[in-house]
Length: 83
Image 1 (tube, rainbow, N blue to C red):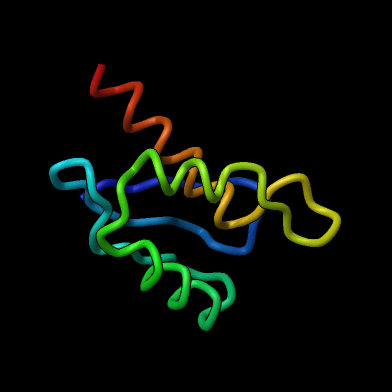
Image 2: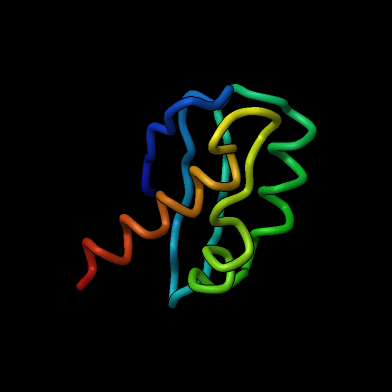
């Protein structure tokens, strides 16, 4: 299980697994529960690269980032580590 500490968003931590290039077991700790659960359900089984493509750059209100954007950054970090 990976753990990512997002910045500038309501969630305190993002927990997830990647198996065979697909995302599983996503959990946002803190933040907006309904949005976090919905996002986690949508991401289940999605390919890592596809999730990055869809989530990177999403903003939350006036913030320059969001929980989806922070998750994309977490996935990019995983890609960097595995290379």
